[in-house]
Picture 1 (cartoon, rainbow, N blue to C red):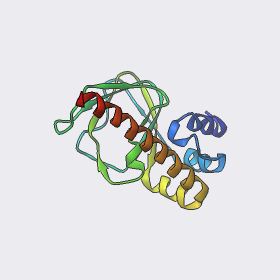
Picture 2: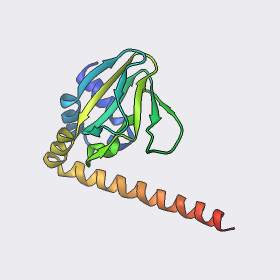
Picture 3: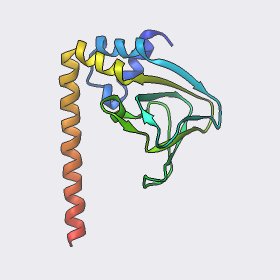
Length: 150
């Protein structure tokens, strides 16, 4: 893919959709491509996460670790795995296994933070996007709470 194709792909990811072309260019240039064969493990639950992965091709099975609740989840192209790891220290809550040949772009946290430092407008746009998502989540939790209280 060309750099412009990479930028267009990044733009389709909800977290990155609010960023301008120059901020996306930094991410696209600094991202590290990685390929996995079917059955290979990208990361294990409990390991320190130092960034996120943008899935370009193939699909990953996310199996919750022993300390996490939930069901297995399959994600495909366009999925951003480890969104919070772009911003803060955390451990993976699931193990990621390639269900077929996979290509990902690894986005190190250091790259993401440098992009935010260099493009303050991107940081503001992301803050606004995250605030909107948190507001929506809070309203959805309120609906669930009211239903449970009945």
